[in-house]
Amino acid sequence: MTATLEPPVVAPPAIVDGMSADDYHADRGSISSTGLRKLLNPGCPAQFKYDRDHPQPHKKEFDLGHAAHLLVLGEGPELAVIDYPDWRKKDAQIERDNAYAEGKVPLLTKDHDMVQEMAAEIRQHPLAGPLFTPGSGVAERSIFWTDPATGVRCRIRPDYLKQLPGLTLCVDYKTIKAADPDTVSKAIRDHGYHQQDALYTDGIWAALDPQDVRFVFVFQSKVAPYLITVRELADHDRNIGRAKNERALRTYADCTATGVWPDWTGPVANIPTISMPTWAVLTETEEYLK
Image (cartoon, rainbow, N blue to C red; front, top):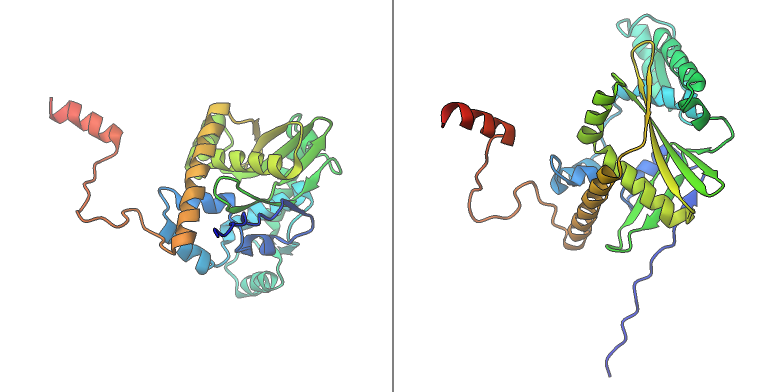
């Protein structure tokens, strides 16, 4: 008699409020948008696995962004204002390190004043202000679901989720050196934000079953007067991001199943060739090989 194979048990979507950022990022049973992006070029599975197994130390350059998120979203680690002009004095460094040890974000007084001004600009902006109206949504909600094509458990953590009649709105707030549209466009390409848009949209569809979903980027410059650009991604770009996510999910599923996490080259018998970037090949061909 042939045994009947039972279909694998798939965990249902989960929506978790109040989950700490540390617990969310430490979850090993799921993969985030950041993880999926690290699996693809210029990253690779080998680097992804190493970074996951060896968590990196705190990066102080992210403190301003975390502080701005707290003041705009109302969610995040507590701030510790350090009343020094810079970090050069030993006492300032001790206060900073004590704040880190307590799970707080240390900010110099001048930087705290800056993020206060940034939050004020958000609140009075004609597009961004209404998107972050206090009480109109939920900040930092953790969502988990299983990708049906690969069986991989995924997770997202929308900055601000607004469930309106007939529409669920996902608002993503990013601080950036310059918020002009050209710089924002390049940042979307360089950081894979089109993949984030696609994964967050898909996760909201899977977990919340809304009538419609829209994902909105709010970029704010970290340079006075802290200008703001609010944009929705073009459909074609989101489709590219979704296709990249699908490849990364397949890669992650294969690596998890086989235990093999390759680098950029993988197992090959011959040494591959490499070329200059396409634009350089075209330019130098025209100049030197004509």
